[in-house]
Length: 359
Image 1 (cartoon, rainbow, N blue to C red):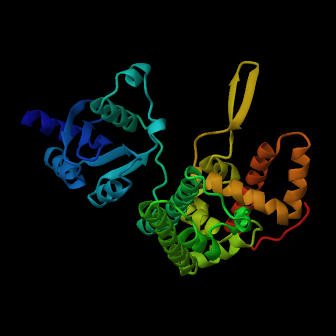
Image 2 (cartoon, rainbow, N blue to C red; image 1 turned 135 degrees about the vertical axis):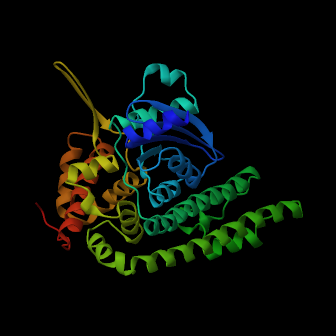
């Protein structure tokens, strides 16, 4: 075995490693340019893998790939530091046979990745810098808090409906909900037959108030982030576009990181997912709805901003009205979101403040 390994080292200069990443273990397949070396399971450690490669394949070039997932990019950063040319890939882009779809396990997955890596069939996704990832975590934390707050508010109202408690006339409008007077009514005026029922409602209201304070603090941190030197200039460019506010702008910046990595607006739109599905075969051609792939967060942000920008940007307002003459409003707004995307690309790429117009 040692003699075989020496021959491999002498003749093969590139080693390809496919990694199937899990929480407690990695399944690894190692290929040379011509043979399959080994498939094995190891602890989830880049150092363990690097040590194995250097011990068995000294003085070679190492290439590795694994699928983006729950574990983020820490393994990628460590592999690069250890001298392994690592890439992170989209799991849906790994070439797969039908048999491998129905007979799937970790060794098969790692072998697929290693084979495709050796054949040059894998496209690496863009991996953000660590600092950008941490900045993005702040924005995503806010998003989670907002969702949790909405759920809690719904629980309080469900609690009231369950016990048949009607809101006073002064709180019939949704705009009056969760004001100081509304919370005071929940705490002092809602009557229940048991003190435990009153305590249950009080705990829910207290949790709502606690989350609101936490959300306020996160919003302050995000405003501080937008004033950082690495974001302030681009942030000012984005908020010059009608419909884009503080949260939307900083979300875009922490997701995109560098607009220069997109060659044109088409590649930018493809990354976000604002491109249609299409099927063409022979003389038949079908164009469907927007693709399910892409950045869901950015896609949602752009659609939300599009609803606002048609109120303030004359050119996009005219376009929206024209689209609505021949399609439903929810389809028209997708086209406005694409136009908004083009404007975002332009102001960031050319570093110019947006100017409203009618063309």
